[in-house]
Image (cartoon, rainbow, N blue to C red):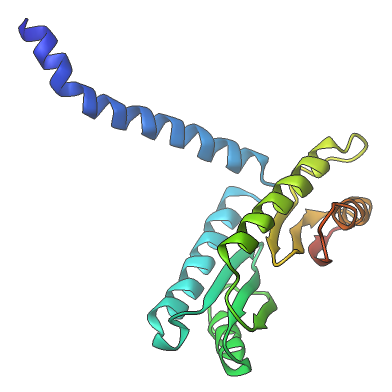
Length: 187
């Protein structure tokens, strides 16, 4: 009886352990599939968090939708802002952040994307990733895909053949309006 009660009381603690184990496994898989080394991944995460921190602490960005991706020191800014000044301000935040190599400022001036648009973008991203993974001739698993208002952004470190094929695949996924190439091509 006491052992059963003890197990019942410890059950919530064990569930937390399971979540940690599953989270660690997913995180390890993501790190292993990434073409960047672990230190670069950590640096990119720090860059992303610093830029987002600057944006989120600035009251001018309330009611705006600014997203940040950092990949190999390159920063992609995307989302929607109310005016050109906010677009430039977000870019300045990125430019002033240590470790940033290039900035792709793809923020658009206009209304924030609706929940329906974001769901559509998630579906497009899923379709593009699936098509990239189906590619038999080239390994395109290291290409990062982000979609915003039917614009697909491709990031990663690839060779020229991989870049050309990834762009071609993304262009032919239904509902894609535009493909933005932010791939780094290595010889």
